[in-house]
Image 1 (cartoon, helix red, strand yellow):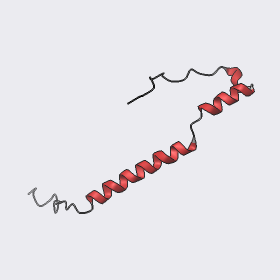
Image 2 (cartoon, one colour):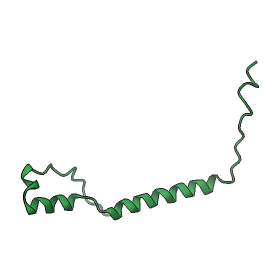
Image 3 (cartoon, one colour):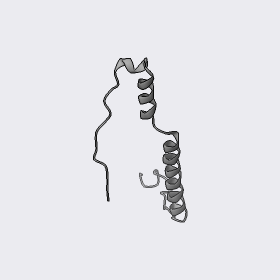
Length: 71
């Protein structure tokens, strides 16, 4: 498996990046793509569906009430 080394979080951009085209370009490149969020949500939905389908046929014995055993 080939992986890139961890570089840590990006350094903060200087205040001047709000006023220059290159600063705005850098800020835009650091903004995560919306498609990544959609893929993460779909992965969570698939996991929840898989868990629900696995537990559908499991019968759980529940206590009838707490007052029956405490007299």
